[in-house]
Image (tube, rainbow, N blue to C red; front, side, top):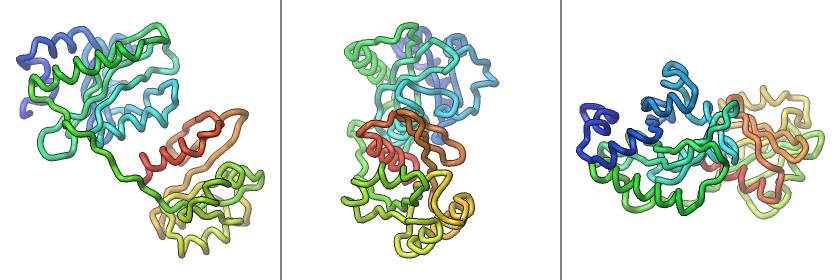
Length: 275
C-alpha cells in the first residue's frame, strides 16, 4: 500500500468499495487506536473538524451505549484480527454510527490499520439482520481490492492475570469480588495497603484493584507507584455510585452497571486492556 490506505480505497478498482466510501462514513485507525483518516461524510455527520479528529484516540473521543469499556474492547479485538460490528457516537450528539470494524493487513499477522465503515443513524434501532448484511457486504468489498481480513478468527487463550485486591473502608472490594476470591487462586485480598506491599512480593500482581480510600496508612497513589515500579502493575480504582460502578486508572473513566455480571465485565476489561 505504497500510495497509502485511503488512496488505495479511493482509487481502487472495486466500484462497490467506492460506493461504500462515497455514501457511508469512513474512519481509519492506526495500531495505537488513533484516527489517521476519514472521509467528508464522517466530518459532516460527526460535527467535528479535521483538526478535532486527526490523531485523536478513537475510544477516548467516542462512546457507546454499552460504555467505553465495550467500545475499547471492539478496537482491541480488531487489533487482534477479529472483525466485527461496532456502534459509537458522541455524548453531545443524537447521531449514532453503526457499522463494521475491519483489520487491514499489509503483511504478516498483525493488522497495519483498522477500517470503520458506518451508517449514521438518528434512531436508536437497527436490526441485527441489517447489520449482518452490511458487515458481509463491507467484508466482500474489502477483499475485492486486496484489503482482506483473516479467514480464521484469532482467539487468544483465556488469560488469568494475578490480581491483588486491597480492602477499602466501605467494604466494596470484598463484597464485589468475594466469589472470585474463593474460586481463583490468582486473586488475593490484602486487608491493608501495608499488607498489599508485602503480599505483592509473592503474588507478583499484574493488576491491582482497590478504591481511592483503601484501609491503611499508605496512600493508594504511593502504593500504585511502588507496585508499578517493582512489578509493572496497573492499578485500577473502583467507585460505587447508585447502580453504577466507576472504573478509573489515571486516564480511563468507565462506567458499568452494577449487576450480577459486573465482575465478569471488569475482568473482560482487564484481559483486553491490561493483560
